[in-house]
Every structure is written in C-alpha cells, then in structure tokens.
Length: 226
Ligand SMILES: *Cc1c(COP(=O)(O)O)cnc(C)c1O
Image 1: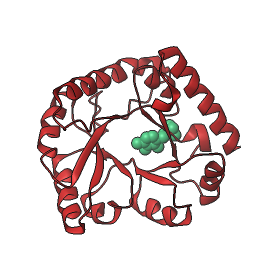
Image 2: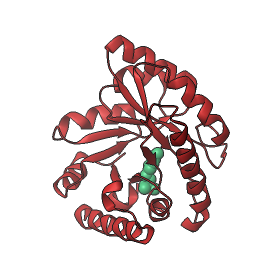
Image 3: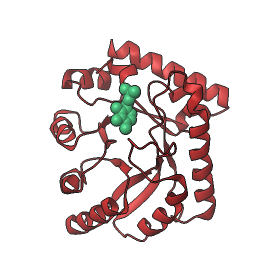
Image 4: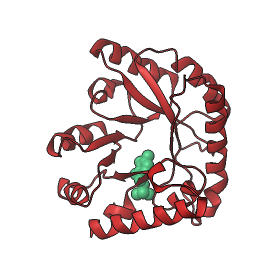
C-alpha cells in the first residue's frame, strides 16, 4: 500500500511540476513517518524514499538507527530547547526553527559538539495563533541575526499552511512565502545558502509545487491516516 501511495504522490508531483514548467528534480519528497511503525518506513525505503520527516525528537532518535544509513531524517515539528542537544547531528535538516532563542540554543550546542547545523526558518504566513514561527515581516531580521552564527547554516524557509478544504485557499500563502524567499535570495544576506523552500503537505502539495516549493512534506498521502 505504501508503495502504491508513494507512486501516486510522485505522479502528482510530476504533474504539478509540468503545469508549472519546473523540473521534477527541483522538488524533494519528504515522507512524513511520525507515529508510523518502522515496518512502514522500510516499505517506503524499498520503494525509493530516502527522506523521512518526524516531529518528535525521541521518535526520530529511535527510528534512525534502525534504518539504512542513507535514509535521511528531517526534524519538522516544534523543537523544545532542551531537546536540541540530542537532535543536532542526527537530523539532516531542522525545518522548524521558530524563534531566536531556539536558534541561540542550537548555536551554543553546535559549538559545544563542534557541528555545523542546517536549518530552515519557520514562517507563520497566515498569522495563526495556534502555530509557531516568525511573521513574514520579522523573517529577514531574524535571518540577519542567525546568519551571524558560525555553527548554523540557514538553508531556507518553511511554512505549515492552514488546514483548508480546498487547497486553492492556500495558494496565496505559498505565493507570499515564495516572494519572501526570492526577496531574501536577491539580498544575499545568507551568503547564498538560501535554496530550500519547504511547503506543501498531503492536502496542498500540488499547489505548493506550482508556487515554487522545493520540499514537500507528505504524511497521510503516503502512510494513511494517523
Ligand atoms: C504531520 C506533518 C506533515 C504531514 O502532514 P500530512 O497532512 O499528513 O501530509 C507535514 N509537516 C509537518 C510540520 C507536520 O507536522
């Protein structure tokens, strides 16, 4: 089942790329495996998945050693500062850096462990009270501050769009984040490391791809309901 679902998602990704005149190689699919058993992650791996997304540090740390060494684990959920020590060096990319205090903690721990940590800044584009992240207008300033840290590389931006019935309702959210991404790139604040735009989930990844996403995070569409 996982294999068939993955193939279906890949087909839809390719179709969205074609509609947008983009190459499918520009978009990375992250299989969001949170709460799902290892057997399902292995099925996905067998079907070609290499990028996995988890939202809890403990779960990521449990699953990673059980998977082949070329499986990459992404930390996509809200990260508590007291968990930073454990997750850096394990997650290939932390998508959910949502405050300066968290970035400061990552820098301190990365310096202590002599690591370089790749992160994305989470942006709360829709200004939802229930969500974490910088507001659009705060993001550039946050990037300037965080870019001064020598053990962190900001690779790009991430957003979790609102839950909507019709994915078209999120098109404007994705457009806004893409515009910020392009603006920031053109200013070269980060010395050219800004290359990742993580947006789009099961309900809206095709629209996100049409609007410039380079990483989509798909859980339900691959592994079924949680
Ligand atoms: C759970 C989760 C996803 C995947 O959601 P689906 O709707 O199941 O595809 C993507 N991003 C984040 C941050 C998540 O927590």
